[in-house]
Amino acid sequence: MDFTKSEYLKTLSDEYILGGVNSPSRSYKAVGGGAPVVMKKGKGAYFYDVDDNKYIDYLQAYGPIITGHAHPHITKAIQTAAEDGVLFGTPTEFEITFAKKLREAIPSLEKLRFVNSGTEAVMTTIRVARSYTKRDKIIKFAGCYHGHSDLVLVAAGSGPSQLGTPDSAGVPKSVAQEVITVPFNDVDSFKEAMDHWGDQVAGVLVEPIVGNFGMVQPKEGFLEAVNEITHAHGGLVIYDEVITAFRFHYGAAQDLLGVYPDLTAFGKIIGGGLPIGAYGGSQEIMEHVAPLGPAYQAGTMSGNPLSMRAGIALLEVLEQPGVYEQLDKLGKQLEDGLNALIEKHQIKATVNRIKGALTLYFTDEKVENYIQAENTDGEQFAKFFKAMLKQGINLAPSKYEAWFLTTEHTEEDIKQTLIAVDNAFTEL
Ligand code: PMP
Image 1 (cartoon, rainbow, N blue to C red):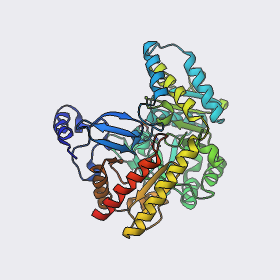
Image 2: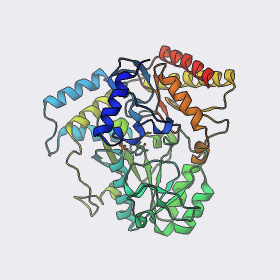
Image 3: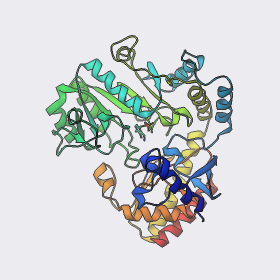
């Protein structure tokens, strides 16, 4: 494969755009550097770069795209929306239609608000929890990503009862001191942190199924324990469903798992590929948000007609029968194929799959928390990533990310992907 134009564009991009990318994970820093492939267009499960190389895409924009690139129904909705005017700064009917459809799918959303990104959604749920409980501290779980607001860019202290330290320059120590980070899937550590800080904790922020150190399921009873302990201390449970909502079934992970938070943050998939975020919960808690309540949140672009109409169109596609069964079936085909190749090549690797999303970790250990994900072999992953890329299979350039399937991937795509994996494993 020839990457001449991508390489040329990298030099140009470095000249004008800081680091050459508009989000750090798009650089190839985590896989040893190099020029990121520059895409020109996408259709279904495929996209095409500026050198006219074709890829089967498992990045799918880090998750938002679940019906493939340029899905005709969503494209049509966006086109029509653009013709009708893209922004009014007044309510539109589309916001109501979309909110109604979301509540029908996710009953815990008695009231919701649209914002523009997952970062904004999570940031606001924290403000609402603080307003509701009149407390300041939050607890989150190591390795989970909740956007780039100050509050969640905080690293763990040395133990469950230690306060956090800034995980990014520019985050004040005073902010980090409001955050406690504990290991995922570890009830004892969580309990220890809550025994210490519980009466100051406004909210506990949880990815109910983790998507940010690969795909990791909650252990049996973990989410129930988080709910019980948090509520016993008078705090709120906040689910970050930015990755998980509409990923595994028509609705949120909370309904799949049967464990319910007090507030939920959304993003990614629900916008059909357009910028979006949303957050919501019970009437009683959401009443704390302006204009009804004292917690302020606003947005010029919030609920914009393009994102609303793309979101409605997306849900119309996802509510068709058989969509999630097909994603699960393809996921299983991919998982089984990967496991057979791991066995054939005697590679130290393991697959975590949840329906149409999976992560291939280079380790022979189970991965159930961040430390285990961190201990997987990043150099092997980097070699694997590049071996796949040159065979026309696009993965996220990080060992911590997932492979996302879409409604447009086919059994034939999976077969081709597995041939590429076979070759890549031979190279390792
Ligand atoms: N929460 C989770 C679970 C995420 O995965 C992300 C983005 N990867 C965010 C929040 C932030 O979303 P955004 O990038 O739209 O701000």
